[in-house]
Length: 175
Image (tube, rainbow, N blue to C red; front, side):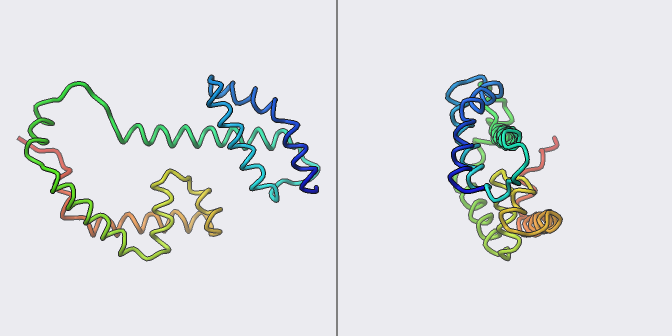
């Protein structure tokens, strides 16, 4: 399929993609973003489309996967930061006893540990940390998914070993 034919066909499904996106997002602006992401991915991965297959189904699959991945990233981000109005005495004591310089030194140690990782471990680990799925990392780096999983696992183990000194700070205090 020529680029012009592909683009024409892609644009012809824009309205039906928008309707499908609204069924996912329940919000017009979010649906617009999802359609835009879907169309951009379709253009970027146009070489993966097999002529003779259902173009609309291919686009819907891209949209569904994009929505799911975005949802997972948002859930992961929200689970890292919990917001609460109450400050318990444990948290108050901890925040009073730990100052910003401790956090600065911990972050410096984390950056040092990351910089010591070899690129073949660092790159997949960083992409995973940013929210990419194993298969996405494998596609981007053009390596098997099993290799991605192994490299991320090895990177975690190396980081745990390098940051062992800080591990005690994250354990719950036993009275």
